[in-house]
Amino acid sequence: MALFSCSSTLKTASSNKSAANTAAKGPRFLDGISVNPGDRVSSRNKSYGYSEKAPEEDKTETDNSHLSLNESTLVSKYATILGVEDKKVSNIDLIEEIDDWYGTPYRFGGSSKNGIDCSAFSRTLSNDVFNVSLPRTAEEQYDYCDHIKKSQLKQGDLVFFHTSGRSRITHVGVYLQNGKFVHASTSSGVMISDLDEYYWKRAYRAAGRIPKDNVTKN
View 1 (cartoon, one colour):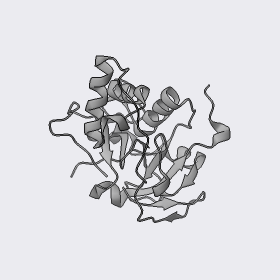
View 2: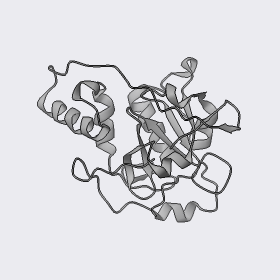
View 3: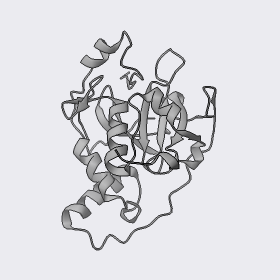
View 4: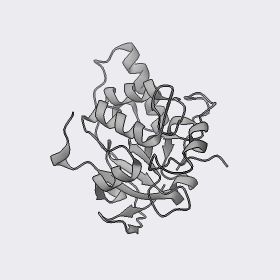
């Protein structure tokens, strides 16, 4: 079984192994779309809880008639990946950013197109698209966020996972919609996965929202 973990700190002994685990596969859209999983919630402290409720459906609809041909094509592609109608895909900046990074290989401690890890990707996406600054590691990002219920997840929120034997947050992704999130996995690099898939459903620990008073761009 492929591994999808991402260490939450740059000082672990496993960093060398993780760094070598880059993705050999490029992005696959529409034909053989890959998605992978999660299902839990936590309070502001370190005690992890559980929630059986899935995120509520995003009812936002957008008139995309003004979009360029390239933008319309991109909207249709990501609507298919996310399993929603085209009119539900409204954040063009977000899907353009994801498309630019999609398939970038995983590299522990990396933060460039040559290789990026999960927390660097969530940090980059949050900064470039949502104008927020996040700490560097997955566990620091978990501590930084206000924790919310899974059913309250909205686009731009963070989802946290426990993917190793240690009792801490080891992986992070950015929530999109319809149960999907984008992240940098160790096996396939930057990709879109589904919270309801078996692996992520077991690994899911919490959902987080950037505090409103901290939504600033450096």
